[in-house]
Length: 498
Ligand code: NAD
Image (cartoon, rainbow, N blue to C red):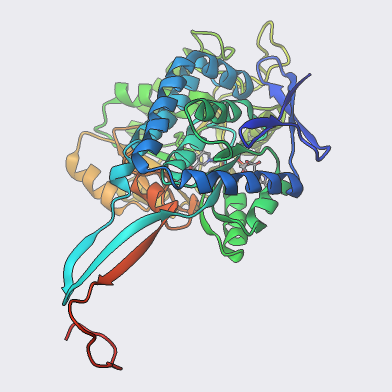
């Protein structure tokens, strides 16, 4: 059986804790590799290596640091197909989607290549007599990132791109469910010219996360995962005096006004609800048609479109989506489907009980559609994270606006309409962090920033964009005077601008 080891100090390091996790092949439904699970002593080794690496790296000027990222981009593009296959083989998403995962991460690397400009501070000449003031962004030192299973390439790059470009060393603790691509990314950074120890990958579960949160030499931690864990991690890291940003789960709504272009809505909803088997934090698992007529039209068209969806293995070029990540996750989704039925929602399309010929043990689930879901239902309030779309009918624009605004999650939301006034008002008033107007998955481009509101995000700064640079740097402000002539008289008053 293949072993997936840590990557510390520029080389593969076998686990010593004696603990391992199973990595599945979701298409075949069996264990394909074992991943080492680190303990605190192994983390210590990675941190020691990161401290040494950072000392060297911080002395490299920003333009040279950017060159390493330019080269990494070239190498990643060279290896795109191999990486996409590796990613699909552990996650289960189809190859075209795995390429998208890599590409969206690469876009943050491209943004980070602008680091010489992004790190520039501010300068005031003549703030007082002979006094100039300037600010500079300095790296924090050693920082860490803890990432979820659903984007094993993109989310690590969201984090280590700006962190490393800013002069930090980075410890990545990827999801133990699909850990191979993160290791390959670290190997490619080394090949691109990154000094040893600047990017380390330490695998593990909650034990090593605890150790990261308590480690005195780790200055900041970025986390992406489910909300309960995000909230706990945020609180524990902050209690240890660390800078924290923790992104959580989601329940994104797609509002459909009566004037929306229904053909576009249907094709957008298919991809956004069922793409990647619904395992995206920016998926659209809830659709809110406004008015009975819109609801009936939408439902009929959804049933028709779902009938044409093709579930296949990750390597089937015609498949729209592949298996979910593990048997445990499949069982959890099925549990939610049954709960929806039990609490009175109408299961219009039931995707359970499907086996893929030739892959009978694979973790496949066909698409499900629920209608007449109401805000009180548990299956509406909680995140399902599978190929399940719920219709929640609304009578009015106000009611449709209230649903995502009152929901515990506030990651993304989309409104489909031809009415500019309504769209503008919706975008202004809705209590959600990322809004799409006729855009089903409004993940912001790399030079903006990604972050949800309410229980979808804990902390003040978003992922990537300028917030990414702010998160991984601290500002130093220097006030300088070069006196001309002799010393002046002692002055015991507080210096002011009077
Ligand atoms: P998860 O919360 O199970 O795991 C995330 C990370 O936390 C992993 O690295 C895991 O090893 C670690 N972890 C697991 N249990 C822990 C514990 N008890 N204590 C400390 N650390 C622990 O999430 P997942 O299932 O890997 O990913 C799916 C979730 O991530 C969904 O809720 C999804 O919405 C969310 N997500 C959010 C965003 C965002 O940016 N808001 C992006 C992608 C995914």
